[in-house]
Structures are given as structure tokens and as C-alpha cells.
Image (cartoon, rainbow, N blue to C red; front, side, top):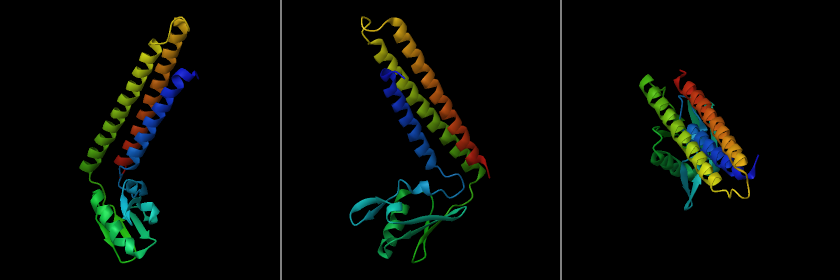
Length: 183
């Protein structure tokens, strides 16, 4: 691949990675420990991810348990989960915290599916913007250094790359939608 368009592929890959991270945070009726990725616990004055202050486990399909390595962190973890507004109340049993995920209603599933589609569309827009920026940069290339045919080929490659990423976004969206709508 030409180095003049390789940087745009990197940007497109980052957009896809961002979408995957967004999707990991959307719960689909089953317990997914990634929902805790954005939750930060005040660990002696430092915001720290939950996974770094205790053991996160999924003992059942709809339950996550968090067992802090230090007992005095129980209240801090509980508070961080409440502040994160995950829509789940933590149950503190004195040694660990249990998060029980309720079964999603049909209405809530449809809302989540809409959210998934919106995130996919936003990512497609980001990909198109990256392609547009690449097109602008390719048009600025000095015609005395590179022939117009080479520039046209690079623009075509950029378009094909963009199409490939949009297709990947559609696949990720369909997969997540299916995951959400499966009871």
C-alpha cells in the first residue's frame, strides 16, 4: 500500500476500534464485564479502573461479581458503580459486590438497537470524512512530481478502502443488533 494513503487506513482502523469499544459497553441482556471499562474507582486519590482494584467475574449469565483485593475498597467500588449510572444497583454482601442484570424488555431492546445503528452511522460518517480529507490531500500533490493517473489510482484505492470499512461497520452493527434482539 502507498504510504500516502496508509495513514488514512490507520485512522479508519481507529474509528472501527472506537466503535467496537462503544459496542462493548452496550449490554445485551447478558452480563458483560466490559460494561465496567469506563467505571473509575477512587483508589487512594487516583481514578482507577474497577478491574485493577479487584477481581471481576461472571459466575452466571446475568451476574457480575466484583471482589476487591482490599476490603476497605468495597464502598468505593459500590459508589463508583452508582456514579457511573449503569442502570444497575450494586448489591454489597460485605465481601464482594454483585451486579444482577435484569432481563431486557422488548422496548428496551429496540431502543438499544436504535442506539447501535446510530453509533454505526456516526462511524460511517467518520470514515467518509477521513476519505474526504485523503481526497483533498491527494489533490494537493504536485502534478510535476506524480502523474494524474497515479493520483487517480490512489483516490480509487482510498475509495475502495473506505467501502471496505463501511462494509465492516455494517457487519459489526448487524452482529450487535442480533446479539441485542436475541432473548
